[in-house]
Length: 196
Image (cartoon, rainbow, N blue to C red; front, side, top):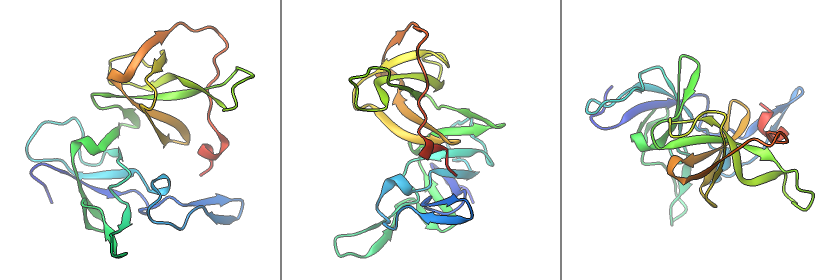
């Protein structure tokens, strides 16, 4: 099956990632269908659009928008699928719903995006565990270099868990400064992001 303008993808696993394995037991993290934090974001590309050029190929793994596989309730309370839904194994998505793709076991950021690792807060007056608006570039579209220490605009980061690591997707043009390393920077990855 091919689409003229859309990628055809299928979810890797189920539509939701709301079960964590703890020892021999499973813990259901969430039973609501509308919470985006528990929606699966990994998909396998079945086919690429007929029109347009892309470096993404069938068989590649892609990190997609949270609304692709999500279900929701309309104003009458009737449960509905997203507009990407074709059947349980087939979804049609636009190129702008793909945030990261994996080719030959390596994640690649599409043009316009970078993924940044948060830093551990070292300020004793900071009540949060992360240093605000700073991070180390993990995946880049080439605008900045991987492993650069950067700062970005407020409210420009969107949280993702990629291979058990918490990352922020930041639009490349929202990265505002490149810092010099001071030597006390430490990456922050909460334990809940690492659990499977």
